[in-house]
Image 1 (spheres, rainbow, N blue to C red):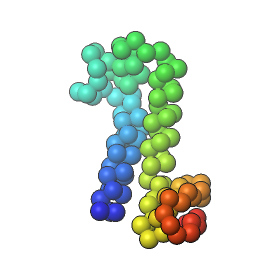
Image 2 (image 1 turned 60 degrees about the horizontal axis):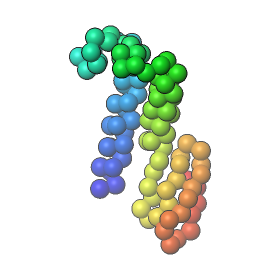
Image 3 (image 1 turned 45 degrees about the vertical axis):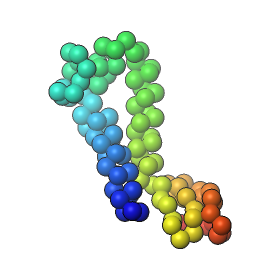
Image 4 (image 1 turned 60 degrees about the vertical axis):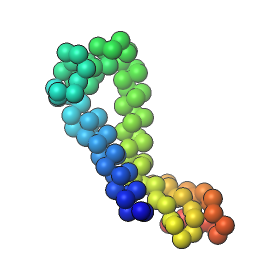
Amino acid sequence: MHYLLIALKLTVALGILNVWLLRSGKATAYRGKDAKTLREEFAVYGLPFPVFCLIGILKVGLALGAPGLVLDSQSGATCGAWHGSCSCWGPSSCTSK
């Protein structure tokens, strides 16, 4: 089950990165209305450019952080591998990996 969760997190993270970094300037069949790019799609739905930037930063930032989250099933600690922080929710001691 642990490896399935890792695979799912990586799949979602890579999908988000693909859309926002590799395909954002390309026309796809999935764009709303007549939009040719991701930025145009936001405009088509009436969202201003700052909202496009904010959503992009949040999605890419979270997608980059998602694979770094590991669940250590033995110690019961959730550790953020990117910044070395760790918070315990289990009975045993918590250490950074």
